[in-house]
Length: 334
Image (cartoon, rainbow, N blue to C red):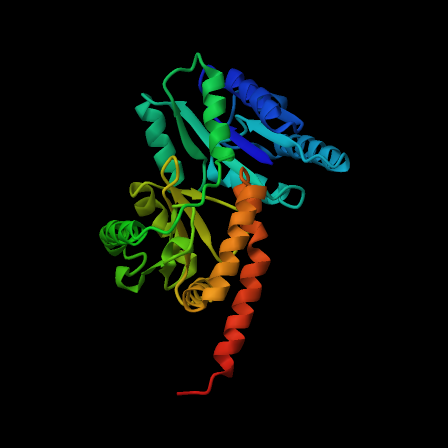
């Protein structure tokens, strides 16, 4: 696990150390904290220079490889490394072959309006870290606990609720209004060409779910996705840049999280996969029951790892999609 900790608070070093100590006690895994001063000769920069980058990559890679050889995946905290989205994206992509699980957090004083404006500005360019606000820098352990709670949110499945559909419809109205105002004004993406769908388990009556509404936003041209960063940020969504997402961009809203938004190409393969799997579950009670049982089992075995929980459902989803599409193809044309 890679954690990018962006904070230039006076208590930044104490927060990094507190997070290291807390995660070690929580997980039992080796935890290493690399501070910017170990790789840079100046104060924490907005962008790391090439000579400093090599030091950072070597130190991080060596620690990950050492942990992997011991069959215990380490946790690497990169503290005050560089706050611009390009740096974080580059770092994640270079370390992904060694450890694909990475997260970024932007920690700031809740009363610091200037820092909030900087976070908004950088967030409209990419992922500079999920905003974590503190009101007491003298309590670094409290900040560490807040970050750890975000990293290891417990997976709680709940019985299906009709409220989930109403929550989606209300959020859809908010998104359409914001997209209409912003995208139409900039002419970046014609608003009428955007598609919004309710996907995931909360869209299937009778299916248990995490009570997080999954929304799929389809664009006519996927490469225009960055035009959506600002309007989505203003709707409360934070972009999380996962390197493995090639044809999809992921956003979350709320602490604790309330909505997931998946930005894809409208009518593209990701779009079709989500809608077809929704149709497969809605139309097949046996498949729905099998998926329910799998989710309950994984919620027990991976209760504190959303990454493992999500990945473990992959084979079932791919197999179910293939079977459903084969049946659809075998049906005689009407």
